[in-house]
Image 1 (cartoon, rainbow, N blue to C red):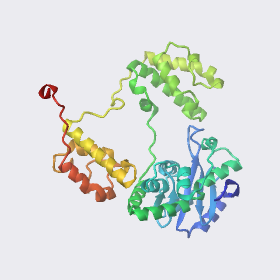
Image 2: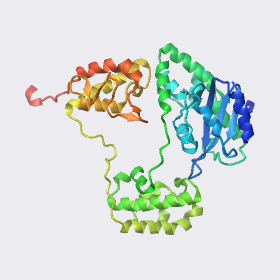
Image 3: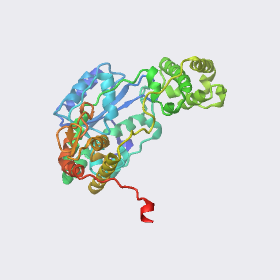
Image 4: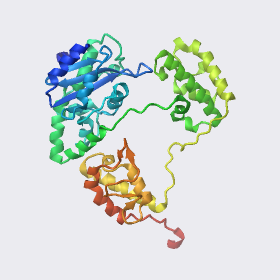
Length: 408
């Protein structure tokens, strides 16, 4: 095992250095990739560092120092070269947001581990489970400001560890998946990752409705919360700080419900900013109290909708089937079949295995899509479609409550 002290990654901070490194790895069949950003410290988050392991080299590409890294994007898009990554969703969205990069031929070790039977999918846990490698991941560095320069030696070693062992991990996981006959399942899941794109956040004027707890506020309280939210966004953008570092959502919630209270009664405002912000916060509360009430027109929290008794019983039966199947395979039952598809099947089933415009074993699934592709996977239909179809044809009967008067 390589200890952090033994890691000496190549640091790339110039166009020439990047070009030279890419020349060295051009013939590699696979590269390990990770990235670090500064979202915990800046309002405008950006990719600050890209870690790559290939051909026995670990390199750290400084995306702040290098103005043009488009050549790196060409490598990521090359379908002949496998990109080994761990828990790729956030990274793919970040690369798309900042550079418009597209990735092809991904192998996600987190996805692979889940299909191999792992339930704890953090990189450190997976490395320990499959390679016996223990890596020390400092919680402090997990919130490091990766836009700060120079990068400390401690941070360099931390970043390098994210890619150092990914090739070896990929080989062990692939061997396990081939033994289980699930490699094609993982390949399809990884192919689906290529469709992930960055989605810009909602404008602040509507985004405040998504904050936890806002749905439960009264319309007048919601108007106050909106004004506080808009103030916080403006302050965060001006200072280039994350909104939670301006003042807390908890403070906004409490002032919305108790607008007459003294601001000093609540936690959430850093002492260095309290005096300057206090008058603006009080003014935002006033605007909210004078503004028209804000109704909430969406679904309440924990809303599931009404379901007919037969459909509810069928859904319960399908969930039981999914849980049983997952347990038999030693994987998370959620991997067996998407929950939203089960709900649609339960609500639309007509007793012949048909739900909406598609069936459990067909090549369609109605309008259920994610990232532009059908929610139900081909491997799921092939492995479980017939079993689920049988359940739809012979649904579980709803249990009728016993009338005590009849049996007494």
